[in-house]
Length: 168
Picture 1: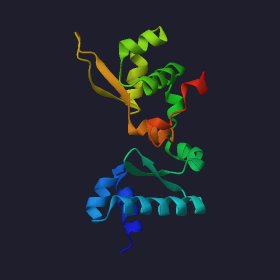
Picture 2: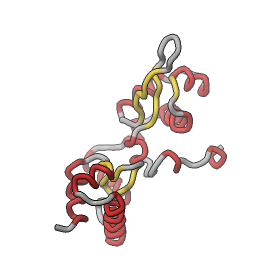
Picture 3: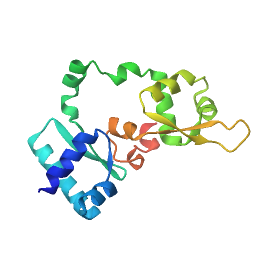
Picture 4: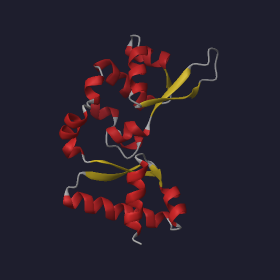
């Protein structure tokens, strides 16, 4: 059997990122072989401008729709995450992305206004997650971004966020 097709079918069925180690273990091949297969699939999808693509996020591989066709997908499925994200939510998301893990109080200190509603919206869209609690009185919740955040913004890892100097 062709390893590329097996990996492709696993990624399709999973509908979420699958760890390279998991693929390596299941197929009894090296992580290097999994990455080579990923590269072949990625090249093939890009060359043919297919409706799906594969991406590497942290130490996982995920299959998703090609953003070239996003407008059609949004119309067909009634999706538009940006409509659901207010300016405040986008600001809070960027603060979390660059300062994670971070508490709500620290986010509010940076923004100067309350942000509970924005945090709830970001949690609802699974762009952020609760990432433990601070070891201090009150045990405030720490927030960080999710793999869905990386996927949505087409970032392989947090290291690929643009430097703050480029933004300000």
